[in-house]
Amino acid sequence: MFNDETMPRMHPSFSRLLECARQATASAAVPIRTQTDLARDMIESPQRIQNWKTRGVSKEGALKAQALYRASATYILEGVRDGPIDSVKFSSPEGGMAQLLSYAENIVESTELPTLDRREKVETKDLPLRFKMLVDDESMSPKIKPGTWVAFERADTAIPGRRVLVRTRLGNLYFRRYREPDEAGRWKAAPDHPDYQTYDSEEHGLTIVARVLHIELRDED
Image 1 (tube, rainbow, N blue to C red):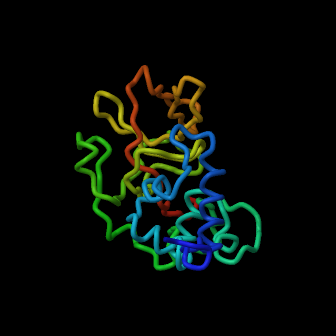
Image 2: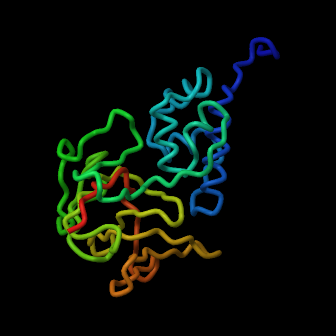
Image 3: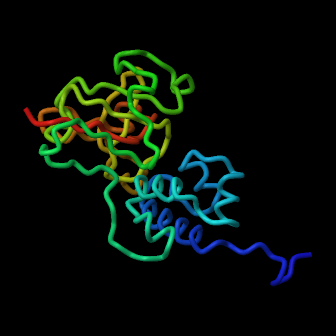
């Protein structure tokens, strides 16, 4: 039997992580409520989530949560609030080199990831866990231009407002922004550029197949 002295306690950093994930996904089609939900959404093993719960969230885990839930990694790890963080920040061109932003400190270069052609007819179950895709149109302009490499992580849920890769019932893949579902659960995948089509979950039979991990930033022409 567990008592107050032997009951495993939730580490404060994990409590803050779960709080941030719950708040960020409160209006999502599949909100996070439990640590099982968290494991599914972060694509982590139940054992790793349990380790975070008892021992504390790792730095990499906090950075991944920062990317997914716009929650400060500093707040998750230390309880110090330094404001919400957007997972994708576009820097000024003064740097002179392409940059790659990622949730992980030990960044995985996009060149090491398997490549997916958007025109390929690949079943979701056959997608790699992580892969890269070359943007081939202006649908997410002006910030994400043709010729930009985007790294994705396979997922079937997302936070409203985030960029995702969706599949239509015909098997076509589109890079769009996930819009908050209505009361009936119907949602849209919208472009950032007004000249491109918005897809509807019911009309086009949409499913989310992946969400953005990081984006290769390029110098301005």
